[in-house]
Image (cartoon, rainbow, N blue to C red; front, side, top):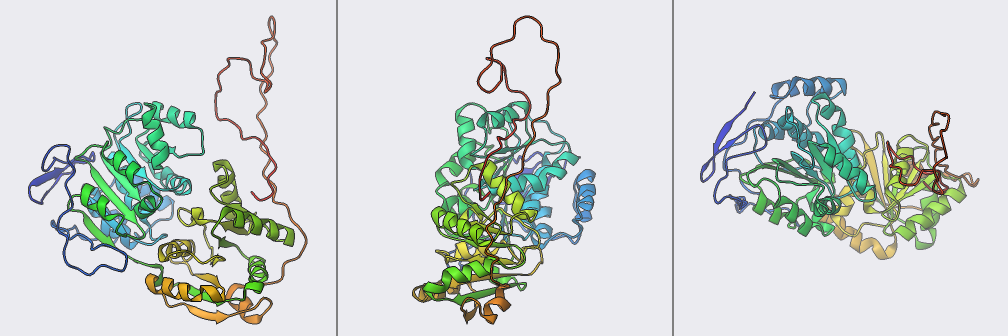
Length: 497
């Protein structure tokens, strides 16, 4: 059923269910978002644009939304019964074709807020080879995989094909998925650009574009790639921008690519989450390593953040030698290693995930109740996103930051910028107060090894050979033979993954 909604900005635009809208202004030139007022912006953030056309009211139930029946059925099957605030507020408008600017902390339900709209408005259409109909841009591989996993059951229910396009994985396989046809592509900017340059993807049919965690994309230097990609999608298409923080780096994207967006902001910072506790533990330099080890040896899972890959690897090795089931996650690991490590952490095979900021976004682990900043983050945004790994979806959790004497002044400024008043406690390893706050305990001291799962290669049915055997390569595959099916990962030895 075609749904149209007519709104007025400077001219009248009609939204259609296929992600298009009648172009306002000069053809092919994105309209700048108007209505910027004099409202006071939060520190480090720009003043949000005022919506010219009134937004549709929030809904109390998913059943109040005009969505395909299979999506509503799948929501029930997945146990998603009541929309989160950001979903209730934005979905009525995004389903009607409006541009949306949404801010909500990690774990607030942003993925379904944009994902349901993308799937509902794309349902019933079929993409041509290499020409997707909807695009979700994300900053990291982990977030891309999380978005894909979250949307997969809903996409299947309306018979839409998803393709994940990220670095660190086979570009040939990703090109094959695009050639076969995918209605919705979830991508990181760099790999998508590579595929476009190769001629494996065209964005001219993309009518719905999502920017998820746009501020991190700008922080990581992806702004030129992001704008180049946005310039290739349908200029009259719908744009949805969601993020946990909206700093001034995002201002360009909003002004250039969003037209009269519906603006919705919930939980602007982790400090607004009543189920999250913030602790700053004052430690002595000489005791910090021992304190970290005891916290890692607690019962239950914990994510520990450090600044560098080398520091992550050193701490992981130390913890393993101390009897703690730890694994490292950082940008120096291959994507299969990172995926395997996350899976082992989620299923409890690994209890301590030692990570750089690569894990600060895009990772959801149920019932994770502790995040530890072994190295304090460099700015308040990093703090908010690290802390966002816990206290998700209404659960409770604690964020603990270890601060040495020379770091105290900088940490105070960072907390003020984040709008957080933490509980400050001096601690030493082995003390009751450290155990009360974090569950710290002495490690066993018995070294452990985290083994990788052994993947068995499927046996091929034997058949009588006829004539002379074909010459094979060193890997046992006939010369010139194509690779079919899904390649099996090589078994390998890696202590911490």
